[in-house]
Length: 115
Image 1 (cartoon, rainbow, N blue to C red):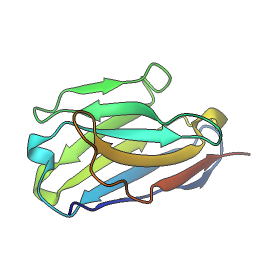
Image 2 (cartoon, helix red, strand yellow):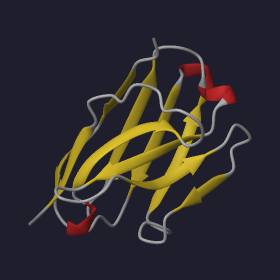
Image 3 (cartoon, one colour):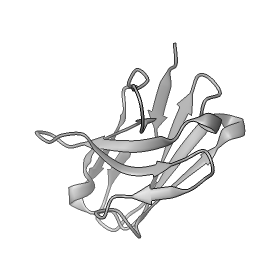
């Protein structure tokens, strides 16, 4: 059973930065395209950034130029560097595959952007 553990969230002022981490219990990043998702209260979960096994990345328009996704296959870890944060980035952030059936969802990490 794959376990995903997200961390790095917190409370930050608008314009601030956070770095999220996603650690997997098994070595699977090397052959799965992975992504960061977020879900704000009352809204659907949305994919904000993805990275494939070759390192190619894609971003939602709402975060393009501000967020950077990366992965370290040797550490089974994926990161999301978030800069120039806005109040509308407030959500629970989770990681998972972007194709096929999802792995069991982790608990996510809360990001709150507020003055």
